[in-house]
Image (cartoon, rainbow, N blue to C red; front, side, top):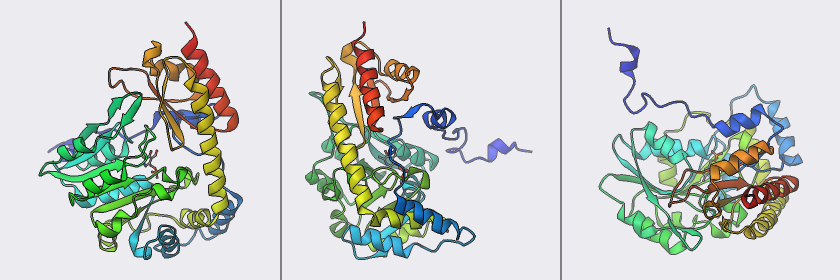
Length: 367
Ligand SMILES: Cc1ncc(COP(=O)(O)O)c(C=O)c1O
């Protein structure tokens, strides 16, 4: 008799469950300040809390397909209607669903690194091959390299994914370079998880009217501040969205997140407050830490700031460990570009941001 192990498909066998160590730590030790996962430090608005309460009472009922909230999302983005919008349990599930529709075992996904980890996680679980194209580190900036992305295309490329703005670097790619990649006809997913911080004027959503292969993804986890509700969505041509939606798990988005999301979209004041708060805190931290000799502070349009402290002689992982001793969770990043000085800080409350500035200065300027 064969062992059960031998029945696993080879591309799943041996892969461990994904557990986010820093998030586990934060829930276990609520006294620590969460400046590691690009969450929003503000709790949901009263209008969102009202919707959560109202629909909690209907928790015994199955959700519908979300036509109302999909219609609202279409309206906000200047699209025809709900047929241009697919909902997901966070944009992480949106990625899973899109990847399952385009990728077969052995086929390739191009990503631009450093970037968010979900593309690799979902690509790998399907037996796909990740092709990582590095951004260029030059003059204290991490730059997109669209030529290198285009050069990485092979017969096996089934998906190209670019975040706009990128996590962790915080910058946007030029509009003309999106067009160059869209012109290849290859499914091109633009991850706009953080775009609201700079405004929808920076979105590439206009491309979907001309290029059927372009899909935009978004989330309510960031500027809208609803990471715990799990609500994300994809925008695209109606035929493409229709085909991808066929692969959705029935009732993948619950009644409560769906109606809370609608309330969040309608509460434009709450979003404006969160964006304004974030952007002025980004300016505060950026300015305060630009004074630290040898520290590279990356200009950002999102709710996190990326740093390279390699030139100070200190290591990013030691910075993160020091911050944790002081009660703050930051995010380390693997060594790259001949530096081991990388770390990322998520914008927190006013008080947390001032603590973070003090902790970074204290560590990086000590002997
Ligand atoms: C670039 C990017 N995309 C997508 C997500 C996932 O968001 P969610 O699954 O919460 O919608 C994140 C979360 O950190 C992110 O950084």
